[in-house]
Length: 114
Length: 114
Image 1 (cartoon, rainbow over the protein chains, first blue to last red):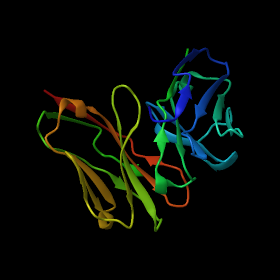
Image 2 (cartoon, each protein chain N blue to C red; image 1 turned 120 degrees about the vertical axis):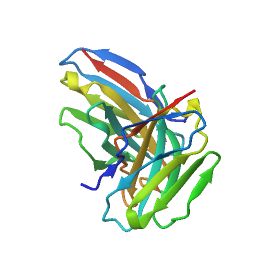
Image 3 (cartoon, rainbow over the protein chains, first blue to last red; image 1 turned 60 degrees about the vertical axis):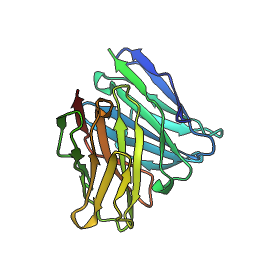
């Protein structure tokens, strides 16, 4: 157990639907990151939050949004789902918003859009 | 884009062979961090090593060793006396020191046959 909890582990949904992925960071970590791993794009950075505020944005689609709550857990919302959104979504956390202390990854949420 | 390149898509070796996974990165940053992660068939991302750009010392951890050469922008990973359990996808990644965003290579799939 890495200390980063992602739920659910698996999700199957239909095109056009909306889903919410949840991430609880490791205790003491203030920063949360979301990554998407797909066959064609590889591992791509989506977005970073630090203590409730958006810190950095990557290749995140407009149909996707995220937030970090006061208790530091984070949610990634994916809407108007398309087949191409099927992927493994990872959450990672770190003490600060920089790489010098490294990152802890969760085990991922596998999303299948049918 | 300041990308990370893992030119070897797939490598297949026989158990007990040594194998080197190549990683080349592009950056204009003065300070940055380099990482290696392992992704076994179960899907989670397992942290292997973090290296600061100022620290060019090679590192050995059991059967694993890493060769960082700033002059050639390379951070190669060698597994000595490979084992079947080493079969996985290995990712090299880079993060600038002033952001938390990880830029991943496309990954190298290593298959170790008995």
